[in-house]
Length: 452
Image 1 (tube, rainbow, N blue to C red):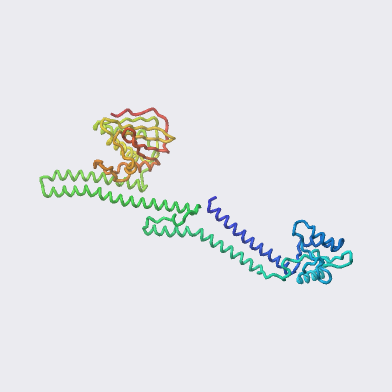
Image 2: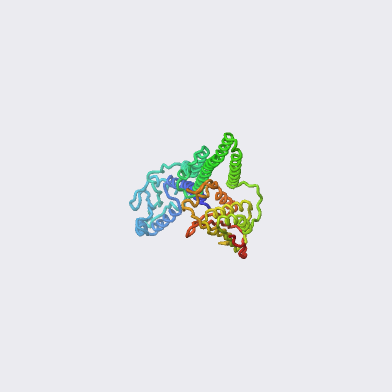
């Protein structure tokens, strides 16, 4: 059960208890009021103590009654049973309330043998009337509100408590509605947690989730704006070079062939850039019409290594590949191929000449893990996560590429429920770790020879 449930349960239970206590108290006070109107007590206790004192008067006279009351258990707790003679005086010298005496005599006349009002004869033949006066009987019936008024008071208190409790419950909902309206109007910094405060229940959890959603929305919109800015910047450069080539061709007809070659190269670059942007947009939106299939990670890595191995040899570098498992993951082969190829090509590009890029496929904690290790300059710690942002390039890095390769790679891996992280190696270099927790793995002998 949730915390809000217990708040509702305890509060409503308390309300019912208060209503019951109010009604019960009203009934009790009504009974007391009736007793006070009669002036005498007529309950079981009154019958018991009046009977004891009557027996002591009948057998021991006034002296016996005095002795009984003096020796009553408990200090100052002896019942105030009046012993009234024919003149209306108490035999023990106590004050007799006229109203109570009048009610006792009427009760004696109407109800002969009534247990709470008795008339007995002492051994000397004197007649006495014994009764227990009600509290405050000396001043007559008390002025108390009728039971209907008392019940109305209890109901008013219950309604007041319910109103306070309802306000306590609905206030965070009103805050949530107000903040959602501000978000809809474009105020992306609006948050509901400062307004709700520390409630420690489901409504506060809802506020925290709402703020997380708002923060995520703000981040995505800011990223989208930055992406549009970066795309416009990247598109502007090749377009400017194409326009320059057109201008040269018009002014210098003899250089038309050279201008056409420049325009062709820039067109190819634009086509490549637009293709990467479309791929990134598809990955970020989560929309894809490609059917899923069982992709063999080890076979895919072998194909990629065969393709990029020639590039490594041409630059005086080498690639080694070791796999002690065979792994399969459900997804889209082309996306995974592009992800691994981007990371591997990035490692070949940055590893030092004469060094080796080491690629391994292993099983760690019930998941398939691909590690790609190079001996390049590495990445500053504060930049390790930023390199996954679209169009981000490290400071001082040569202006080759568009800064989209790693961004596409991470999003493609995430689409396959995997993770892609970068770590600096001891002694220099970078370690790229790709993990697939839901991959199906089985032990296999090391495959694929070194490519050097």
